[in-house]
Amino acid sequence: MAVIKADPFDFPFDPATLGLVVIDMQRDFCEPGGFGETLGNDVSLLRQIIPTTARLIAGFRAVGLPVIHTRECHRPDLSDLPPAKRDRGSPSLRIGDPGPMGRILIAGEDGADIIPELYPIDGETVIDKPGKGAFYGTGFGDVLKENGLKQLIFAGVTTEVCVQTTMREANDRGYECLLATDATESYFPVFKQAAIAMITAQGGIVGWAAPTDAVLEGLH
Ligand code: C5J
Image (cartoon, rainbow, N blue to C red; front, side, top):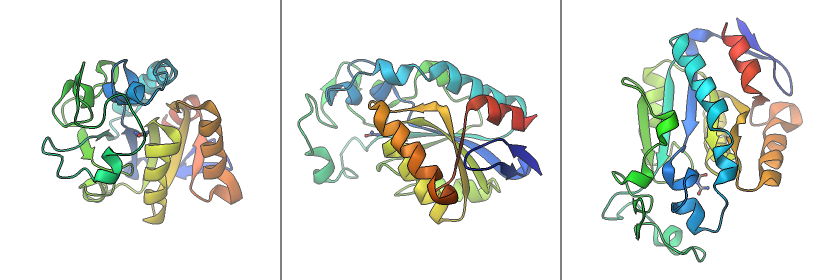
């Protein structure tokens, strides 16, 4: 067993069953003019983690372990978009509306795609998901099983929404999950810290947390 130094205690893992899940590093969340900004958020906060996340991805690729990417997006006909989601709040543009990077959070549009700095390479799986969690309405669970994965390292945005939701879903399904604390970000720094605290509290009730350097050290 290999080990990653983590909170609330070391994370032992079998490299044969470990994978990296990078949540929603999309232009719509990380670049001006996308969904995140239409909600009034400062996207520069999320951009701070791009170099660290790139290093984490490169580390997994270097040792031949799987990298899975997700994208929060909807079908062009909006058939997988509940009105309750589209109508929530008062963004300047709603999901499906035309914006500077194409229709907001719609599959196939530039804004819904992954940022160029972290773009998937050939052979990596990309899961399009209509919800905040990656299991709902997708083949994510099947992909994990087909790859024999049991332990998951998580990165991406936003910590307290899609990352935490997916970690909780995975934890309930028996996966052991670790969050790379400097490869995840929120538009609200206080929410990021709270999410990490919630995940690791009570003996790791949702999972573990560790910085990218500790994860990469564990891989070697
Ligand atoms: C949000 C996400 N925050 N990827 N999506 O709406 O966390």
